[in-house]
Image 1 (cartoon, chains in turn orange, purple):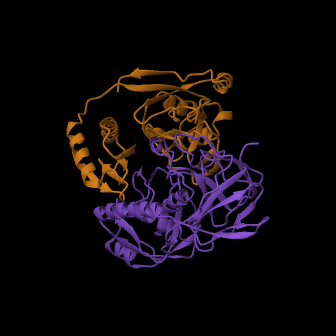
Image 2: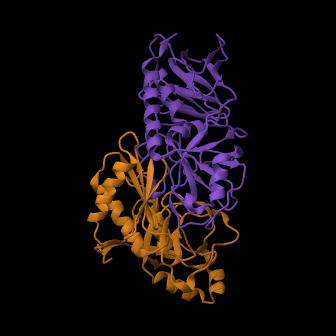
Image 3: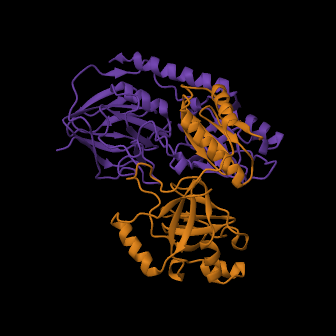
Length: 240
Length: 319
């Protein structure tokens, strides 16, 4: 396994497994992240998994680059490529035209019917590579080839919270209203980010996601339940 | 009535910051915290606070505030401006020393002529509950601090202490060196190999200036364009404050404390942690020269800086 340690100043380092978006790399990154956290290495502040590398933030007064590198190299030696069960979320998704501003355009550009776009998107199990961009924003893949499109040439200044979006070979959900350049093909009534939760993001890197189509009526009912803190997103433990 | 500071004029961007919010970058929440950690620490030391007590960070133009507590003790660090008391016994308390003000006194921190940021520490600190373990304000995410935002006229920022004892006031043993002429030291990488040899040479031998597009997310620089050797897109990886990313324009951006946690532009180098406060103070138009150091040296410089802060804090002089 070809692993590179890259310096990122004196408060972080990058452990790089490769330079592509790839499930095998992602699994290695996530395994190392869990190992580093569990090892409670002195001076480690936090770890940030990305598609193909792990950033380890550290306190330079409590450790240093060379001791941390040595400690992480040891952990890498113990890391085994054993598939572990994952948490699979079933996220309600409304694909009605009223809730999917770009669905017609995506259908047209991919040469599929809107129903076919929805069928493909809602029958794919996605892997959460990482969270980033804005708090709680999950980068999920891989999107099946027929749905792959570049980002919009005219990004929106305001994308509503809950928008389900696709671009390149990724899909995502906007947790908060924010600018965005992805194609909006649906909407979910659930909350992905809430400062009242001990861990403010619902989803974690490494979790799996399926989108379950719901009607506008069900969307409204779930949204009302979410607003009353009376809705729990269905999830189960699934094979990797 | 709750002890507070009432905001008469908000200033350009006044927020509450402590030493930062760590542990949530995995979910996309940046650490925030002060642009100039050194000044925050020294200001807290002057009023007798613990090092990480939240203080007010003001950018470019400070606020006008009114004391609505029995008394408060304040200290300003990070610029050469002062605390201008405008009511009653009008006077100016220079930066780098503490002062006790009485109820209803109104004071102003004017334009920060020589620095981007300055810190007003308050004995006891503001009475604000932490969000995700920190009182720092992340304005873009509306997280933490005073309702997740910058101050507005009419705000009343609650304080922990109703009043403070009369005691000797303190000054820093020597004024803070704003270090405007000091080269900014960087560790090369993580993606220095995405640039041509010529670009690396240009980066380390040219004058850059801070552009007007500078905020808590990042300082865009103006100067010679840096040529990419392998394109300007990378598969996203992690970002740390101080990272110098170079997008397609070829002009570097020094990412600061509110930066995104991940990103897809190559980073030519990373400003060492000891120098983030130094670059943090540099106003648009100021010159920046980069010099490369090894990680070992960066770590040593940070330890020396910490020792120097402690030495200052332990040797305050009574005034």
